[in-house]
Image 1 (cartoon, helix red, strand yellow):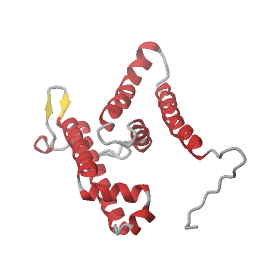
Image 2 (spheres, rainbow, N blue to C red):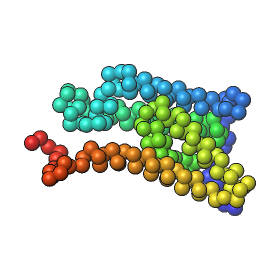
Image 3 (cartoon, helix red, strand yellow):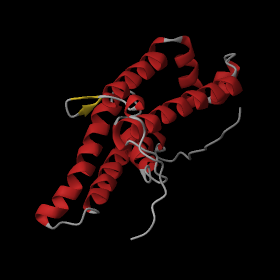
Image 4 (cartoon, one colour):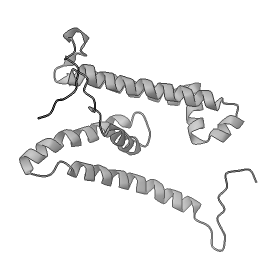
Length: 188
């Protein structure tokens, strides 16, 4: 075996507690999703964030400070990502190990698409993906099925969720008979 770089176990006083078998970080994640939904759909700042995300030129024309909103959004995203890492380190693993989060970015994209980018939809989508990944090792042990099958299932979910959006886009952009479609990014 090789040497694994990791920190010593964190002090018990610094660990995030568990309630039964459920880490408190689970409830913190649900609270963060609810707070994000409230921010995005019930505040002026959330309206500005959504407007800049949908069309930054229209947002600028409407008087929204696009650069400020982008930086604020990145700061909020960084905060949420940092909280996720802290919860994983302090509540689940109990120490820091480099590479503990390998592949989470791709899982996040799958979850966001499955949730249709709704913060409250992220909760059941994340539970589904998490359950599939947690069950993959047991499935490999019991049924002798390779654990990579979960990656294939996630890819199929991503394909079918994306296919719906792509078909809607194609139908919306389809030209009438005899017309040509002109796509433009400027006025006129």
